[in-house]
Length: 264
Ligand code: ARG
Image (cartoon, protein in one colour):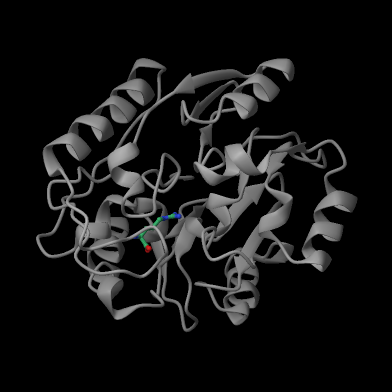
């Protein structure tokens, strides 16, 4: 995670970002702290990367890379506004014992790559290039399922799809939740065929970034503005942990965006 000490909205690279609208950095830090403290209280180990002045989106660490088995596939951002984050994230991985895989293709890390059981679900359409799906597959020698996003509000895969059980036994299919309308027809077919038991989230819950949630397989850290999704989670035996990151939503990010999973 990265404390949003320099958070602001000074440019617009997604439809949520309106630079004319004021932001409250102290409030962003307070809200972020509640997420951080909830992770720690529930037994998770949280590592921090130092925020860099002039990189207001660095709080969205999900975009800082994608890690499996001690290897970190580094990001290559679509927009120059975020390119300055590439060095700090790569340096952090190298300094913390990860082997860094340097990307040739544009990709925004765990914003667009989600590990679901043994396969990598990979988003494209707005940020990560389709060719990065081949690259991430070869870096980790895993099957990649490509999914195309079509709604500009849901420009990263992690804004439209959530993996609910990060660790599954070999061969088992992961449980996911997703917003069908965020995907093109072919991707909706792939998701329906591959994940018949998935939770399909309503447009209302999706529109408040309900799917931008983090799960440890039991607790699901989720926006309090998505009560329908919380009810669906409870029906399936998960425990929703509501965390309000309204200030960080002004930058187009939520709980999952502020969280990069480290798999050693
Ligand atoms: N302002 C950031 C951007 O547009 C938000 C990133 C959100 N991150 C995510 N994983 N969805 O790049």
